[in-house]
Structure formats: C-alpha cells, structure tokens
Image (cartoon, rainbow, N blue to C red; front, top):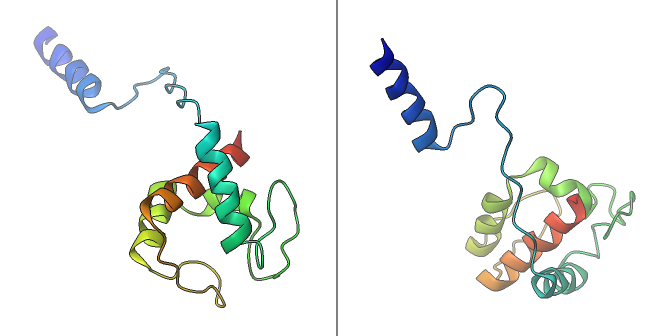
Length: 115
C-alpha cells in the first residue's frame, strides 16, 4: 500500500500535476523590452480594430479589446496561429503572418495586460 502511494505521489510530481492544496508556481517576470515591442506590434497591426491597454472599447465592435484576448485564447496557440498565418478572431480579422519575435512580443504584451 505504501509503495502504491509513493508511486502515485511520484507520478503527480513528475508530471507537474498539482495535487490538492498545491499552489501554482508564479509566472516568470516579463521582459520589458519584449512587452514594449509587443505594444508596438499591437499599435501597428491591431489598433485599427482592437482597443489597446486597458481600454474597454474597441474601434470595431466585433473585435475584443486586447486586454480580453488571453481570456479567450491560449497564449501559445494564439502566437502559433499568428506565426502560421491562420486567421483567428472576428469575421473581419485579416490573416496575419507574423515573424516569431513579433508573435512572442505581442503575447508578452497581452500577458502584461493581465497582470
């Protein structure tokens, strides 16, 4: 019985699963330069439709404000979709084909809005 409990505990620890009463590890600090670059990407590529910063209103009512995006999309999937050129989001959303650094920077900016 003890061996079974030890194996279960080892499996939870090895897989990174949090058991009952566990506290999630804090996120790593964001690189301020990457966040700044991401804001620049957002201004150039996104602000025509999406509200920036903590603005509640987007210029295009179909486009959620930037502060809402990571509540709707997984950050890594969103970055991957934007790099691959897949159109995500509202009906009028253009297809983007961002460079990896642009997508990573944009996601860093979006994460900064959540903190």
